[in-house]
Structure formats: C-alpha cells, structure tokens
Amino acid sequence: MITISIEDIQKAKQRIDPYINKTPIIYSNKLNKWLGHEIYFKAECFQKVGAFKSRGACNTIAWLVENKMKPDHIVSNSSGNHAQAVAWAASKFGILSSIYMPDNVSKVKAQATSSYGAEIIFCKNRKIVDEKTELASKERGTYWVPPFNHPQVIAGQGTTVLESLNELDDVDAIFAPCGGGGLLSGSLITARALNVKTKVIGAEPKNANDAAESIRKNSIQILQTTPDTIADGARTLSIGDITFQYLRKLDEFYEIEEDKIIYWTQWLSHLLKVRVEPTSAMPMEAVKKWLSKQKSKKRVLVVISGGNIDKDTMNKIWSKDYLNEIPSLQN
Image (cartoon, rainbow, N blue to C red; front, side, top):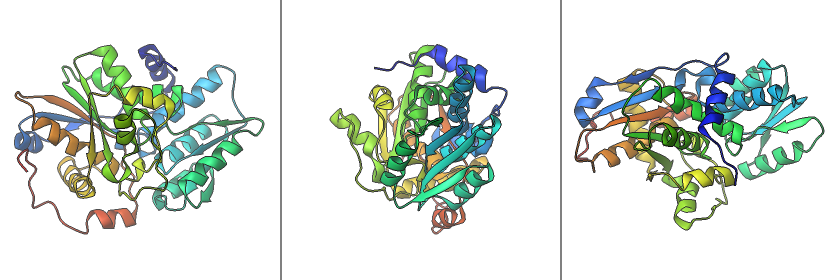
C-alpha cells in the first residue's frame, strides 16, 4: 500500500508555490440565503491552465528535477485539463512532452495543450489512449505523469484544500468532483490531518460511475466504453489502485444525473460570475442533497476544479434555460 502524508502535501506546496496561482475563495450571498448555509468555492478556474491539474503535474515534474531524475521526455494520457497541465509544467522545466488524447476531447483543451508546446496524439477511444501511453513510457529517457494514480500527482492536488483550509476556518464538509480520484484523495489526506471532524464528500456523473461502483463492490470496476457525460473531466474508465485506497474512506459519495450537472453549471456561472466547467459544478448537487439532511447550519467548501469549456459543450449547457428554477433544498 502506498501512503501519502500531509508532509508530502506540505512539501508539494513548497515546490509549486513559485509556479502556480494562489486562487481565491469566493461565495454568493444569494445562494447562501436561498439554501440557508455558508457555501464557499475554491476557484481553481483561475489556476494556471484554468484547472487544479496544474498542481499535480507541476509537483511531479518538480519532484523529479529535485531528485535528479529529470527525464528527456514526458508522456501522459488525458481528456483535457491534465494534458494542458503536463504540457505547461514540462515547458517550465524545459522538457519535451507528448500527450495522448481521445478523439472526443474538448477542442479548446486540445488546442491549449498544443499551445503549451506538447505533441498531441489522438486515439479512437480512452482505452487505446491508455495503452499507447503506457507503451510510450517504456522508451528510454521517458517518464509517464499519469492524470491521478501517482503519489506526487495526488500530493500536488492535495495543496488545493491545504491552501483553502489555511484561509477558511471551521469547515464542516469539503466537496469535490471525481474523475480518477486524485483531487478527492489529496483532499481527504489534507482534511483528515488538519481537522478530523471535516467530512470529505465526492460527486461523480451517474453516467460515468466507475468510482461509485468500485466503492460499492469494494474492488476497482472498469467501464468498457468511454462514458457519455457532459462532465468531460470525469470520463475516466476507472480509478487507480492508489486513489481507490482513499476514495473508499470518503464520508459520502453521490452519483449525479446529467440534467443536474447542467443545472448547476448554469447557476454557478450566473451567481459567481466565473466560468465553471460541468465537472466543477457537479458537486453542488451533492452539496444540496447533503445539506437537506442537516439539522443545523453548516459551512462547506466546494472545489471548482476548472473553467475550460469549448463551444460545443457550451451550446449543450445552454440548450435549455434552468435559471428560472431557483435553487432550493426542497426541490
């Protein structure tokens, strides 16, 4: 069993602080009034490359350099934000990078990845992406920075909540989306170390519920085809053996329907006045469900994991107007 400690996350923060943005914590008075609780958002949409993924990629590459293991070439597999993060971080350390991506990847994310200097190799589906990345990683002088199942990636993602809890006191619960589970794993490690009373709760698309099924069956479940969900950051086929160790320790885990993902993408974009990816908005439905069960006022933190949306996704988000349906714990 691979163990990641709060000390690993604190070291990661020291490594990446010179390179990343300290993102703000924001809130909506109107949303808090409607729901009757204090809800804060860690806005990683303002992070380098527009997503929290910069933290994990930057920490992993900085850790390699620090330990005199700097590779000649870095490869990775990603549906978007991790691809940008690896390309960006590799360029910071003067390392060539190649990213394998599925054909259905967000166009804006693919274009951004290329702009950071990475070579992009498109593949028919996520399974082929993963297979080709693993094969390429065996070449001499090449290192694979995976999207989530790596101790230094998880440690880097954990700095999101570490930074947040250094600023925000007495948080009752932390909510984050689940793709491969790196962000949730890092969040759990950090929360457990700083305040054992703080709950950590995950959310995943019902249409891409490999993590939920894995938790239920107590073994890693693998999807056979790329899931059909608007939350493109959560289109992973399975979680990893490292992240599974932590995801099974979460306090709660919710599976979210597509219409609810779109509903909260519209409302958070409207209320917070920031660009919110569907994957990032997804945990708000979990927040609503959890708060509806509480007997006292709670203070919660939601990680807005990213803000990169292409035109096609934006058109899907706004094909139906949900802004006439006011958020409430009763509906």
